[in-house]
Image 1 (cartoon, helix red, strand yellow):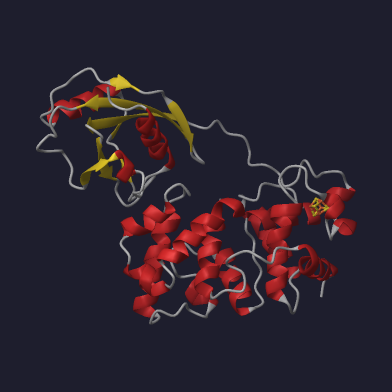
Image 2 (spheres, rainbow, N blue to C red):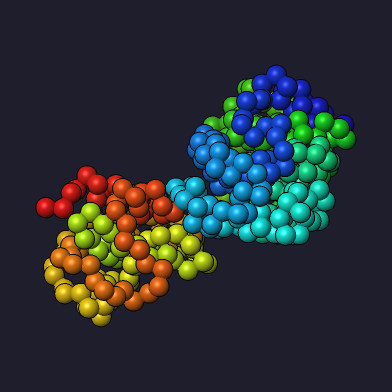
Length: 347
Ligand code: SF4
């Protein structure tokens, strides 16, 4: 066994986390936690995870839920394709695998939303199978420990990291080792100011020895982030607001949002086209929501209606009380607007 693996296993037993709600659990819970932990920190994930398993305690109950129910439990976690894929995968498991989480790596990786590292993590943590993982935290640990230069988003850099991940894998105690790597990445070898003095592998770390901790892992090459603009039309009747279900793919796919337009002119045209009488309305504060690939500047335009219109342009629209809307499957910026509406009551 490599000394890297030995040190990590020893460290995990003493200093690693042993109280995470998904530890020593079945494949369903390990899978769910792995999906939630992609792009999201442990402390944020724990309450979402607990609410999720309370409502969907097994694959059958998740498969039987509606997409709306699943996304309502995901509301605020972001990257909603994760929730939609989880739901689809549960339905596939029920149809193709009689509701049992598949055992074979090749079958797991075929499920929607599961890549090589997630499939390997389920195999290693749930079944103690010898599989290497390479999530964002592990990429950082290995880039530093092995001194691998280059942005991990590049194929050849990622390939080098995979080779190291495979080479360092122990022949036994794989579950403890995998958990150790995850714990190390999130609590010791952190993005900024890693705690090298507490690190179990400090003696052999290339980044530490060559004083390149700040440079490794190499960042994504800088590129201007595109900026986009949107107007959210908040049609209010008393305390009710009109929300539309967004198409299944694209940003916030399947979530409920106010009608969205490129600018105020387009919002007012839509308003008139749907047989509503235009009035001035009022703008709430513009704010910015940052996605991985662009920034969206959102201006909420609130228009109060005397009567609810008889027709709206698209199917999949619903009037909800603001309170009720806060419990629906909505993305974070919409939550922010609704919370503001709660505090700014209609005059
Ligand atoms: Fe990370 Fe520091 Fe440990 Fe190297 S010594 S692996 S940089 S925590």
